[in-house]
Length: 243
Image (tube, rainbow, N blue to C red):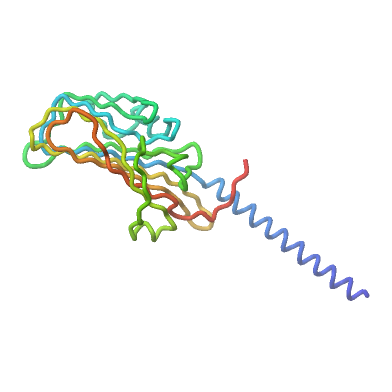
């Protein structure tokens, strides 16, 4: 009988130690995740032209959520976006369906020689909350309005980084400027929303989106930008945070 009691107490002690160990491990993992977790939006907008443009007005889509907000919107509002030329007037507009930045400038002129003029605006902006990288279409910043969205195969480089879903879509840009008939203008915007953390080793997940448009000659109206989106990239075996 005493032997049975000793064995039973021993088993209970082992179970207790195992339970405490599991609880302590889970608490450590959640604490490490919570304290190291951060979200960042990386944004770029590149405009190139091989010919002089004059009397320039652009309405360029700014990545925003369905409510019209994002750190990029706040960055343009505070003029915290690097690379905005000093002679550009920049103003945000909320159309109700999209958030856009209005750019006006007397001219964009390529330097002498054969090099095109290139303006690159960029920023890395912290997010106040965890970024939803699984469903950015509904819950995170995107170039809007989003139209004609359809799922497409992911390229091999993206597939190697998790189990992503990839899409193509279109959005709109307004351009009004005078230029020679053969003038070529390219506008490309990119956005990466990324969460990072450290639990024994670095971890992250993210989504990526980009829109682009090539225009020839003078422009006086709205054009369609082609867009791509890849979401659910990276690691998602992370602790579920409680409030």
